[in-house]
Image (cartoon, rainbow over all chains, first blue to last red):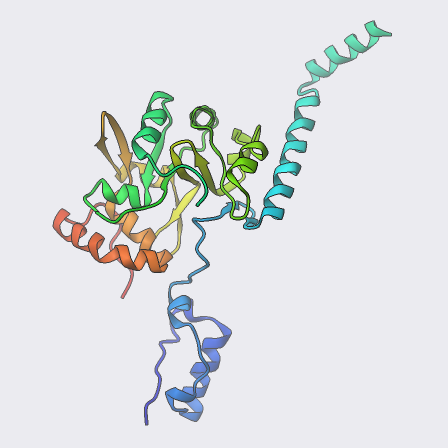
Length: 104
Length: 183
Protein backbone atom coordinates (compact mmCIF):
# COMPACT_ATOMS: atom_id res chain seq x y z
CA UNK A 1 0.00 0.00 0.00
CA UNK A 2 1.29 3.50 -0.91
CA UNK A 3 1.27 5.55 2.32
CA UNK A 4 2.01 9.22 2.86
CA UNK A 5 4.46 10.39 5.50
CA UNK A 6 4.59 13.79 7.10
CA UNK A 7 7.02 15.13 9.66
CA UNK A 8 4.55 16.72 12.09
CA UNK A 9 7.30 17.88 14.44
CA UNK A 10 7.87 21.00 12.35
CA UNK A 11 6.03 24.07 13.50
CA UNK A 12 5.34 25.09 9.91
CA UNK A 13 3.09 22.05 9.68
CA UNK A 14 0.88 23.17 12.54
CA UNK A 15 -1.95 23.58 10.13
CA UNK A 16 -5.34 21.97 10.80
CA UNK A 17 -5.23 20.28 7.43
CA UNK A 18 -1.88 18.67 8.24
CA UNK A 19 -3.11 17.39 11.58
CA UNK A 20 -5.97 15.79 9.71
CA UNK A 21 -3.55 14.16 7.29
CA UNK A 22 -1.27 13.00 10.10
CA UNK A 23 -4.15 11.50 12.01
CA UNK A 24 -5.39 9.62 8.99
CA UNK A 25 -1.93 8.19 8.36
CA UNK A 26 -1.25 7.23 11.94
CA UNK A 27 -4.60 5.77 12.82
CA UNK A 28 -6.24 4.59 9.67
CA UNK A 29 -3.29 4.04 7.28
CA UNK A 30 -5.19 5.53 4.38
CA UNK A 31 -3.65 5.12 0.89
CA UNK A 32 -1.97 8.28 -0.36
CA UNK A 33 -4.39 8.56 -3.23
CA UNK A 34 -7.27 8.89 -0.77
CA UNK A 35 -5.73 11.61 1.40
CA UNK A 36 -7.25 15.08 1.26
CA UNK A 37 -5.47 17.35 -1.21
CA UNK A 38 -3.10 19.64 0.70
CA UNK A 39 -0.75 22.20 -0.78
CA UNK A 40 2.25 20.87 1.14
CA UNK A 41 4.72 23.19 -0.62
CA UNK A 42 2.71 26.24 0.35
CA UNK A 43 2.53 25.12 3.97
CA UNK A 44 6.18 24.08 4.11
CA UNK A 45 7.35 27.50 3.02
CA UNK A 46 4.63 29.40 4.85
CA UNK A 47 3.94 30.91 1.45
CA UNK A 48 1.58 33.78 0.94
CA UNK A 49 0.29 35.25 -2.28
CA UNK A 50 2.84 37.10 -4.34
CA UNK A 51 3.18 40.45 -2.66
CA UNK A 52 5.66 42.29 -4.81
CA UNK A 53 3.09 43.35 -7.36
CA UNK A 54 0.85 44.98 -4.82
CA UNK A 55 1.27 47.75 -2.28
CA UNK A 56 0.93 46.46 1.28
CA UNK A 57 0.72 48.63 4.38
CA UNK A 58 2.40 47.71 7.66
CA UNK A 59 -1.00 46.92 9.18
CA UNK A 60 -1.45 44.26 6.52
CA UNK A 61 -3.87 46.21 4.31
CA UNK A 62 -3.31 45.24 0.68
CA UNK A 63 -4.10 47.92 -1.90
CA UNK A 64 -4.88 45.22 -4.41
CA UNK A 65 -7.87 46.79 -6.11
CA UNK A 66 -8.59 50.23 -7.55
CA UNK A 67 -11.33 50.88 -4.98
CA UNK A 68 -9.07 50.04 -2.02
CA UNK A 69 -6.24 52.14 -3.39
CA UNK A 70 -8.48 55.13 -4.12
CA UNK A 71 -10.09 54.93 -0.67
CA UNK A 72 -6.70 54.76 1.07
CA UNK A 73 -5.26 57.65 -0.93
CA UNK A 74 -8.25 59.89 -0.22
CA UNK A 75 -8.12 59.07 3.51
CA UNK A 76 -4.35 59.63 3.61
CA UNK A 77 -4.62 62.98 1.85
CA UNK A 78 -7.37 64.06 4.23
CA UNK A 79 -5.23 63.06 7.21
CA UNK A 80 -2.23 64.96 5.86
CA UNK A 81 -4.36 68.04 5.19
CA UNK A 82 -5.77 67.91 8.73
CA UNK A 83 -2.23 67.67 10.13
CA UNK A 84 -1.11 70.63 8.05
CA UNK A 85 -4.03 72.72 9.34
CA UNK A 86 -3.54 71.79 13.00
CA UNK A 87 -1.20 73.92 15.17
CA UNK A 88 1.77 71.71 16.03
CA UNK A 89 3.07 72.98 19.36
CA UNK A 90 1.85 74.97 22.37
CA UNK A 91 3.86 77.92 20.96
CA UNK A 92 2.04 77.55 17.61
CA UNK A 93 -1.27 77.38 19.42
CA UNK A 94 -0.46 80.52 21.47
CA UNK A 95 0.57 82.34 18.28
CA UNK A 96 -2.62 81.23 16.58
CA UNK A 97 -4.65 82.48 19.56
CA UNK A 98 -2.87 85.88 19.45
CA UNK A 99 -3.55 86.16 15.71
CA UNK A 100 -7.17 85.27 16.33
CA UNK A 101 -7.39 87.93 19.09
CA UNK A 102 -5.92 90.64 16.84
CA UNK A 103 -8.34 89.83 14.06
CA UNK A 104 -11.38 90.37 16.28
CA UNK B 1 2.02 46.76 -17.28
CA UNK B 2 0.96 50.29 -18.14
CA UNK B 3 3.87 52.78 -18.16
CA UNK B 4 7.53 53.13 -19.13
CA UNK B 5 9.83 50.11 -19.23
CA UNK B 6 12.55 49.73 -16.64
CA UNK B 7 15.67 51.90 -16.90
CA UNK B 8 17.56 50.91 -13.71
CA UNK B 9 20.57 53.07 -14.51
CA UNK B 10 18.45 56.21 -14.52
CA UNK B 11 16.87 55.23 -11.20
CA UNK B 12 20.18 54.58 -9.41
CA UNK B 13 21.62 57.78 -10.89
CA UNK B 14 18.73 59.84 -9.50
CA UNK B 15 18.99 58.11 -6.12
CA UNK B 16 22.72 58.83 -6.05
CA UNK B 17 22.23 62.49 -6.90
CA UNK B 18 19.71 62.78 -4.04
CA UNK B 19 22.00 60.83 -1.65
CA UNK B 20 19.35 58.25 -0.81
CA UNK B 21 20.57 55.55 1.58
CA UNK B 22 19.23 52.29 0.19
CA UNK B 23 20.05 48.65 -0.49
CA UNK B 24 19.39 47.03 -3.83
CA UNK B 25 17.64 43.63 -3.61
CA UNK B 26 15.55 41.40 -5.90
CA UNK B 27 16.30 40.57 -9.50
CA UNK B 28 18.31 43.70 -10.30
CA UNK B 29 20.35 43.10 -7.14
CA UNK B 30 21.02 39.53 -8.29
CA UNK B 31 22.13 40.82 -11.69
CA UNK B 32 24.96 42.71 -9.96
CA UNK B 33 26.37 39.31 -8.97
CA UNK B 34 26.09 37.98 -12.50
CA UNK B 35 22.52 36.74 -12.75
CA UNK B 36 21.19 36.98 -16.28
CA UNK B 37 17.47 36.60 -15.69
CA UNK B 38 15.56 39.70 -16.78
CA UNK B 39 13.25 41.46 -14.37
CA UNK B 40 10.47 43.96 -14.88
CA UNK B 41 11.06 46.15 -11.85
CA UNK B 42 13.75 47.28 -9.43
CA UNK B 43 13.37 46.48 -5.72
CA UNK B 44 15.17 48.10 -2.85
CA UNK B 45 15.09 48.53 0.89
CA UNK B 46 15.52 52.04 2.21
CA UNK B 47 16.62 53.41 5.53
CA UNK B 48 13.35 54.55 7.10
CA UNK B 49 15.08 57.32 9.06
CA UNK B 50 13.12 60.52 8.57
CA UNK B 51 15.89 62.47 6.81
CA UNK B 52 16.50 59.60 4.39
CA UNK B 53 12.79 59.29 3.66
CA UNK B 54 12.76 62.98 2.79
CA UNK B 55 15.65 62.43 0.35
CA UNK B 56 13.87 59.36 -1.03
CA UNK B 57 10.70 61.36 -1.62
CA UNK B 58 12.64 64.07 -3.45
CA UNK B 59 14.28 61.42 -5.64
CA UNK B 60 10.92 59.83 -6.35
CA UNK B 61 9.45 63.22 -7.21
CA UNK B 62 12.32 63.72 -9.70
CA UNK B 63 11.29 60.42 -11.29
CA UNK B 64 7.58 61.39 -11.30
CA UNK B 65 6.76 58.39 -9.13
CA UNK B 66 3.15 57.33 -8.72
CA UNK B 67 1.48 54.35 -7.10
CA UNK B 68 1.25 51.29 -9.33
CA UNK B 69 -2.08 49.55 -8.78
CA UNK B 70 -3.58 46.89 -11.00
CA UNK B 71 -6.71 48.33 -12.59
CA UNK B 72 -5.72 51.99 -12.27
CA UNK B 73 -4.33 53.59 -15.41
CA UNK B 74 -0.95 55.32 -15.27
CA UNK B 75 -2.68 58.61 -16.04
CA UNK B 76 -5.11 58.27 -13.12
CA UNK B 77 -2.30 57.07 -10.85
CA UNK B 78 -0.30 60.25 -11.55
CA UNK B 79 -3.25 62.38 -10.48
CA UNK B 80 -4.11 60.24 -7.45
CA UNK B 81 -0.55 60.09 -6.15
CA UNK B 82 0.01 63.85 -5.97
CA UNK B 83 0.99 64.70 -2.39
CA UNK B 84 0.94 61.07 -1.24
CA UNK B 85 4.60 60.03 -1.49
CA UNK B 86 5.72 61.71 1.72
CA UNK B 87 7.75 60.27 4.64
CA UNK B 88 4.49 59.79 6.56
CA UNK B 89 3.30 57.48 3.80
CA UNK B 90 6.44 55.30 3.78
CA UNK B 91 6.39 55.05 7.57
CA UNK B 92 3.20 53.02 7.26
CA UNK B 93 4.02 50.98 4.14
CA UNK B 94 5.55 47.52 4.03
CA UNK B 95 5.73 47.30 0.23
CA UNK B 96 5.10 50.20 -2.12
CA UNK B 97 4.74 49.41 -5.79
CA UNK B 98 5.46 52.47 -7.89
CA UNK B 99 5.64 53.44 -11.54
CA UNK B 100 8.17 56.11 -12.47
CA UNK B 101 9.31 57.77 -15.67
CA UNK B 102 12.18 55.25 -15.54
CA UNK B 103 9.91 52.25 -15.08
CA UNK B 104 8.48 50.19 -12.21
CA UNK B 105 10.12 50.43 -8.81
CA UNK B 106 9.25 48.79 -5.46
CA UNK B 107 10.21 50.26 -2.09
CA UNK B 108 10.33 47.54 0.55
CA UNK B 109 10.34 47.95 4.32
CA UNK B 110 11.91 44.50 4.72
CA UNK B 111 12.56 41.18 2.99
CA UNK B 112 12.22 37.65 4.38
CA UNK B 113 15.10 35.55 5.62
CA UNK B 114 15.06 31.85 4.77
CA UNK B 115 12.88 31.14 7.81
CA UNK B 116 10.47 34.00 7.06
CA UNK B 117 11.92 36.41 9.64
CA UNK B 118 11.58 39.93 8.29
CA UNK B 119 14.91 41.72 7.79
CA UNK B 120 15.15 45.48 7.37
CA UNK B 121 17.70 47.76 5.74
CA UNK B 122 19.49 48.06 9.08
CA UNK B 123 19.71 44.27 9.42
CA UNK B 124 21.10 43.72 5.92
CA UNK B 125 23.16 46.75 5.02
CA UNK B 126 26.30 45.65 6.86
CA UNK B 127 26.70 42.41 4.94
CA UNK B 128 25.95 43.90 1.52
CA UNK B 129 28.54 45.10 -0.97
CA UNK B 130 29.25 48.39 -2.72
CA UNK B 131 29.27 47.59 -6.43
CA UNK B 132 29.68 49.65 -9.57
CA UNK B 133 26.44 50.40 -11.36
CA UNK B 134 27.45 52.45 -14.38
CA UNK B 135 29.14 55.55 -13.02
CA UNK B 136 27.79 55.24 -9.48
CA UNK B 137 28.44 52.94 -6.53
CA UNK B 138 25.39 51.10 -5.26
CA UNK B 139 25.00 49.15 -2.02
CA UNK B 140 23.67 45.71 -2.97
CA UNK B 141 22.31 43.14 -0.51
CA UNK B 142 24.47 40.01 -0.11
CA UNK B 143 23.70 37.43 -2.76
CA UNK B 144 22.89 34.94 0.00
CA UNK B 145 20.26 37.32 1.39
CA UNK B 146 18.70 37.79 -2.04
CA UNK B 147 18.67 34.02 -2.52
CA UNK B 148 17.13 33.49 0.93
CA UNK B 149 14.31 35.94 0.19
CA UNK B 150 13.56 34.15 -3.05
CA UNK B 151 13.68 30.73 -1.41
CA UNK B 152 11.19 31.86 1.20
CA UNK B 153 8.88 33.59 -1.30
CA UNK B 154 9.01 30.45 -3.50
CA UNK B 155 6.83 31.86 -6.28
CA UNK B 156 7.12 30.40 -9.77
CA UNK B 157 9.38 33.27 -10.85
CA UNK B 158 11.61 32.67 -7.82
CA UNK B 159 11.87 28.97 -8.59
CA UNK B 160 12.89 29.90 -12.13
CA UNK B 161 15.62 32.23 -10.88
CA UNK B 162 17.04 30.07 -8.09
CA UNK B 163 19.11 27.48 -10.02
CA UNK B 164 21.26 30.21 -11.55
CA UNK B 165 21.53 32.05 -8.23
CA UNK B 166 22.60 28.86 -6.43
CA UNK B 167 25.27 28.32 -9.07
CA UNK B 168 26.50 31.89 -8.62
CA UNK B 169 26.53 31.40 -4.86
CA UNK B 170 28.61 28.26 -5.11
CA UNK B 171 31.20 30.00 -7.30
CA UNK B 172 31.30 33.14 -5.14
CA UNK B 173 31.68 31.37 -1.81
CA UNK B 174 28.10 31.81 -0.63
CA UNK B 175 27.94 35.45 0.46
CA UNK B 176 27.47 36.49 4.06
CA UNK B 177 23.98 35.39 5.10
CA UNK B 178 23.43 32.84 7.85
CA UNK B 179 23.67 29.17 6.80
CA UNK B 180 20.66 27.57 5.17
CA UNK B 181 17.95 26.34 7.49
CA UNK B 182 16.22 24.41 4.74
CA UNK B 183 16.50 20.66 4.55
